[in-house]
Length: 474
Image 1 (cartoon, rainbow, N blue to C red):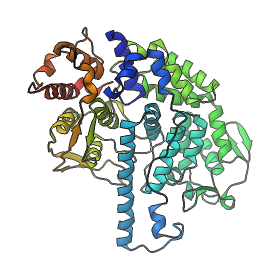
Image 2: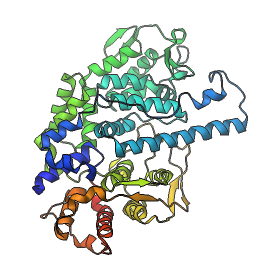
Image 3: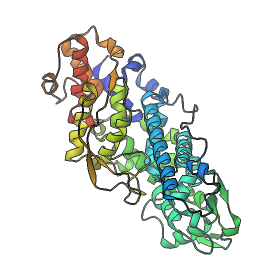
């Protein structure tokens, strides 16, 4: 296969999925670029919920969480511990789905929305429901996604709208809906916040996490919002925000930074945003327009994005197929690298970009492939799970973080009949988007390659490539 064509395909897979996997080699080899893009959307209508909870952990112990009851310290610890454990299970289940799912684009874009609609609360059932709302609507219509998340128990709780009542308005939910979810900072006034908060009064959820509108605490008075006056409710506010093209631009710009380049081309973003708005916020149409544009594949966009910790850990498992027998250690890596799903550092989510990299996280990133290959032990600095400090608590060292995995090289059988040098170039293309004309020096990995057997040779070569600074980029 011509190297430049293969590199284009791998570039697309790095942005639209969690990376190349040798198990899909035939598809990559046989399909042309446009067919590969089309295939990424094939499963967009197929959706299956994840998570094992059928009710809130809290509901098992409290008949009605709205009734203040004296909780013994022991019962409070039990509830908190169960919620933490369930969130860990949910995180691992989702990350495994990112590795295995045929519907890669859904999970990749769901991870984007998971950061866009950042939410941190301990109720694992509510978090599970909101994640499934995000996953279900990840490639659909942004209006449906916005409404689903805004009415979720997790978000209403996180942004304090349970406390937003006519007699005592709480502006937190209204502010973040505009600043973080739709318009972006600087595109609304303090009066907009106050009036929107009045419209959102009465938006609540019951003990099972179902949305309900409580008319008794809703403010039925006239509200003046963004040049219009009326007895607006919460849905009216969301619809008016969607009617503003500023929202389309804000979402398009943020998504562009996630899958194209953190340094935006404003002309491209504006053109995409206008089409996004004209298509009534259809997310798949926006993504298709990006992936089928010639400029998307330009050299300036390659290696422009630093992989997030989740993307890195999932990508390693896709590039080098394996079964991890100590999956909880993935959570340790997530925490040490600064991205624990369901625990964003603040309401704005994870800042991403160069924030993923510092001296300690880079060293760990470079070591992880070797740790997996060799089942090795290492002391890792991890953050404490501190709700009050929102994940910014001081890092503390923990010992005994060994990760064990069974690696399966059989899917790389397509490399069997080519010579060593060509094999190395092919792997550099598949894993680093390199080519024979690139500046990547093969000697940087050749000294780490083991030649005891064919399997050792191949595995050590892949691990050596994944242990380079270049592998942190996509």
